[in-house]
Image (cartoon, rainbow, N blue to C red; front, side, top):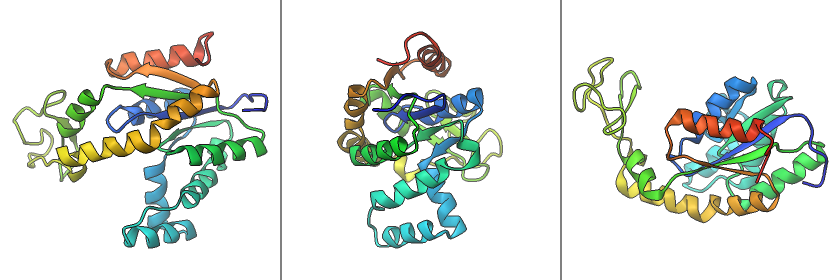
Length: 227
């Protein structure tokens, strides 16, 4: 990135919806004692707290428009400057496109900081569709299930509270297809962007969760820091 790498454990997680990057980010956050910064959580926090950035985002969202990159960037950078992120963080959902990545890189250079790695969890599209469309959620206690990988004891019924399970709107087949198309159009080019910078760590996300975690740690903590 043009500057010497500092000692901070600053990571970016890449992966299509359903690849499991949120799960792996949570595990890495615990291991390294750094925050998992999800853009979804950032938006919810700013909206619920009524911050200036949250109000700006709400104006666009209420009109059915995409929140501009500069608003998302400002939310992310503000969070990354919090005290608990001083020694590192794990970004999940940001940068979302090359323009955001370029802006983020310029901010890091000015702050004399650098990314340790960009972890890309790759899963075949057909597997992603099966993972996403099979998810079911309890509207009562919020427990999560999967019709194939984690089914309830009684089909369609929550084990914990007995409520009828539902499929979220964004997990329906037609919506899943659109989500994956958006990812390929906007976010997938980041793989090439970070590969060219020698930061990309590719991991096979088709493996069981524990194996994926082991593979990430081997790359981050082994002799090979990046591709």
